[in-house]
Image (cartoon, rainbow, N blue to C red; front, side, top):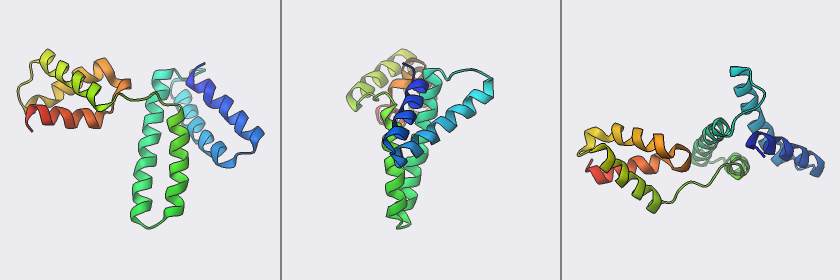
Length: 149
């Protein structure tokens, strides 16, 4: 079952269970999917596009959590945390640091990068091979560390 279909099924289940918080989070996800559908006039959202949308929504929630926490609004931060948990249910697990480090090492070797100025070349190779499987922020940190930035 595709992510798009799983979100729709989750909405139905949340409605039956009268779980308002989960339903609100799923409606937010579905809203992002509907906008993507309207952009290219398709009938469904492919999983790779759905994952990209979910990662974007997760990043927005993390930024909101940080802002609300700094502003002393723990009630709003808790609501965003609950939404983030629902979003992460549909995301595949990202590679751990050891696996990402191995991929970074391979990409550095494959591209022949020797210094920090070639960071973009290494990131490009990594994204081409492992975009949906890794945390880009962690990868960038590891590349900078290994290339001596």
